[in-house]
Amino acid sequence: MRFALALLAAVSPVLAGVHEVWWNITYVQDANPDGLQPRRVIGVNGTWPPPPIDVQSTDDLVVHAYNSLDQPMTLHHHGMYFNSTTWMDGALAVSQCGIPPNKSFDYVVPISTSGQWGTYWIHSHAGGQYVDGLRAPIVIHPPTEKHAYDEEFTVVLGDWYHDEHSVLLSKFISIANPGGAEPVPDSALIYYAQNASYLGPIAGTHPDAVTSAVGFNENATLPFQPGKTYRLRIVNTSAFAMFFVWIDGHEMQIIEVDGTDVESYPTDLVTVTVAQRYSVLVTARNDTNANWAIHANMDTDMFDTVPEALNPNVTSSVTYNASASVTDLGFIDLYHDVDDIALVPLVVEPMLPSTRTIQLEVLFDTMDDGTNRAMFNGQTYVSPLVPTVLSEMTLGANATTASAYGPFSFVLNHLEVFDIVLQNGDAGKHPFHLHGHKFQIVQRSTDYTSDDPALNPPINETQVNPVRRDTVQVPSGEGVTLRVIADNPGAWIFHCHIEWHLEAGLAVTFLEAPLVAQARNTMPAAIVEQCEALSVPVSGNAAGHSDVADFSGWTLGPFQQNNGWHSKGIGAMAGCVLTAVLGMLTVVWYALGGHISEEEMEHEARVQQEAKARRGKLFGLIKPKN
Image 1 (tube, rainbow, N blue to C red):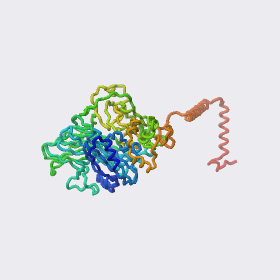
Image 2 (tube, helix red, strand yellow):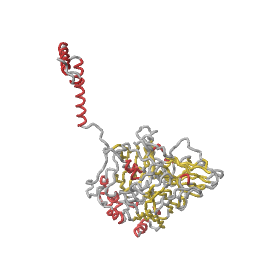
Image 3 (tube, helix red, strand yellow):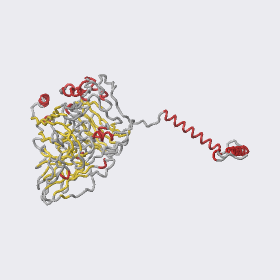
Image 4 (cartoon, rainbow, N blue to C red):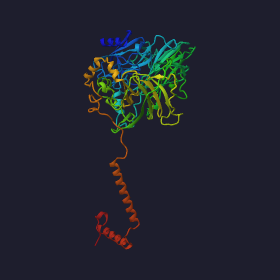
């Protein structure tokens, strides 16, 4: 705690207020939010779901985390910058080794100096723990909101699995699953929060005892009053599923995307992929004759199969009158994505010219070990033996050598402006998240392989104020260009936020201004101490060696199968072809009679008949009589 306060004093020239929360990370038995099957989950202070966090933008947040699990764990405050303090980012093997069991760590989030407000969330970034429930919304309130409204609620969406992550992962990355079919959720969840508390279930309902303080799905409702305007902060905390969200009988106006306030943008449908956030304004109706359905439908196009038992469409409600029925208008005619590139931020940030382009093509394939893996540019990510930030901080001048961090890393100069050109060569949609930054979306293509400017247009460098967000969706066959300013020295991971794809290797790391990061070093001793407690090396390159080219002891791969023609294969095929040709020539030779005369052929036939007569019948058991 002493270090946390000292760090806050260092990052906040004028000491801001400190908003502290104490989280004991625990297992919670028999949680059953969907009412279908109880299971063990990961919660906080013995309860699930973990509590929502509300904080003022003028305060700094400190999360005192104690690990009561039987495995290392981390917490990642999704979308927060952590300016020059990468080690607070919570990405396992990138920014820390993880909190060992029965140890604690203070996550310091310097909100007051980040210039950030809006809708975010907190989740584990270790071992798929957020799939097992370690996830919650965060709302940061500025002194004055840009848009006017009367009241607000946070809408939490999530997919839900009945099996634990470790069980699902062992089936996903397996030679028995060479096609890479992801685990399909068993159900979907929608629930609500307000003022750092979850809304309870509808009166008269009887939810599961462990989560009885929270209303889920049809047991959850938003209380509306006629004529009021409500802000709904929508957060998708899923491991896999994208959601289509709409409210029967009501119109919506998008006013925020991933913590960026935008000009009001009307929409009938909000498409929220994994890790994204949207705020919408909804004006209540002037009558109380009916209540109305809130729909949250999972995008089943992302699933290889849709199990018969799965209900991908969950509904909740808006309540005007507790005694009135719920009006459910059913399905809409056609789903569509939010055109996020058309959103206009209220705070103008100019589009600076790029000096570097990093192209990343998404591919999936069955690898040389028989498992299906994800790749950027043909390379699947493998966690380094030394957390990336520790390599950056201990390699001295060699920290600017990109290869020291592995074949999936890029070193950036301080304040360099660069483009990430994402190209989705996979058959599915993917949400990509960059830690420590927001990016500008400056170009989209509906076919990144095309030369047709209508399908793959060039970047318009005259854009005045492109939309900014931290998580972007790229559909199959499409591309997007993200413009980023390398203004945050440290080590940051860029990855697909579908948890199964991150586990399969769809990630790269960016090393920003390593020498500047070293000069600003205020890394807490606990980072190194906890690595040592876990027997993780704390210095050197990705493999833990001072020689940046020595990667002994670190296993990369698996790699794509080399299915081309090799020398042995060519030789074998040539032999087969030669044998076949000789056989065919022999058949033709005999068919044409070759050089044998008719007399010789008759003689050979008589010899064969005489031999058969001597053998007798039934394979020689009955001999001919003399």
